[in-house]
Image (tube, rainbow, N blue to C red; front, side):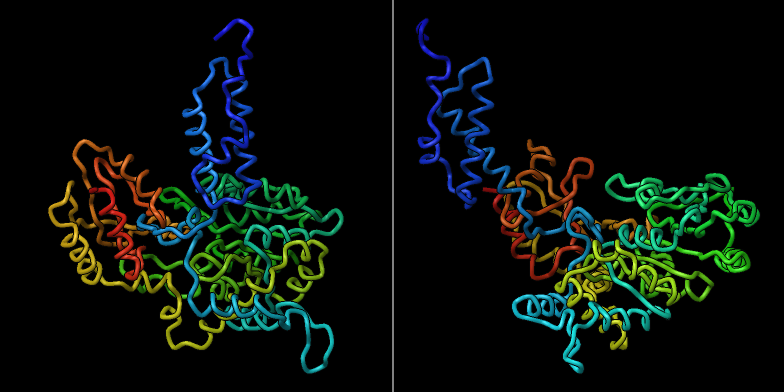
Length: 455
């Protein structure tokens, strides 16, 4: 470089790079933003990059941005409720209902018989109450919002103390912790007992004139065993009602069918059971074991549910028309089917026999043939996921891929770049594809993605 030459002189212009970038189907303003950000970062570097290297960096940054779009993937992890991959797939009927409602006007808040303004979600809430054996129900946009809403609604003035066992101060997905949620709701937390042992007497001693409610939190994402103790729902409900204090339970995943019907799965606590054992108000997720869209569902005594719906915070967390349409379809399926699991994709996946999974695997291995690498069939243990049934192992069949000289994590990265991306799991020295969470109609797409590795 000559002494008087400006150090940034060799950097191509924005227009020049814009002409040469690979088409990523991104909106032009986003392409320009990435180019400017990349060039600004290069100008701050002490070394001057070659134009080809600069263009390569811009293309890499554009590819990274394009990959951050929400898009369909093939879930080959064996985790049925995969939070990072969108929890559970929706039933076709729920998806169709949501689409049809979204593309035209609807009775979201309109009373047809009276020709006047109606109440949002009144029908689905009535169905949900019937399904759970509750006096009333309310629907909000997720379970954390349901928890906060109920806490806010049931606290009054100085009665803002929430009694909770230390053994239930859990952390849920994404780093969110129950104590943080209680604080966000404006509650004063009154911890009782110890991590592993909390007695009924611990709760009794904590009740005072400042007590707003007693909170039970279902340990849905971990199990405690050994030297542990906690009072039963019935015992705690008896104490709460004797003291005139509401008893509220966050059930988390909230199954609506007996999960013990599947071999290897324990029974999960259901909202109807909780209410039947004396819990006053319960919240749970719509998009986990229920198999519906993301929603926070509140069921229980009418007086408490009504308080929650009248609280100003309710408007901030209510659901939109598309969620309500999908949820309405799912709830009706539970109420109207002889066996609702036939209508829910989550349970359809659980119902797949090992023999059917093996047959699908054999077809893929046969099509792979003698190509580079070894593709074999192996038994695999899947998981429920989503913070539900943490000890459950779901017997399954998987494809095991090994390519000599190529690390499995490198193979995984290549498949994540496929269209659609294939998300497998690295176990030891192989890349695994669990067929239970892959839909049969995706087998050809999976095979094509695998064959692309052998080219």
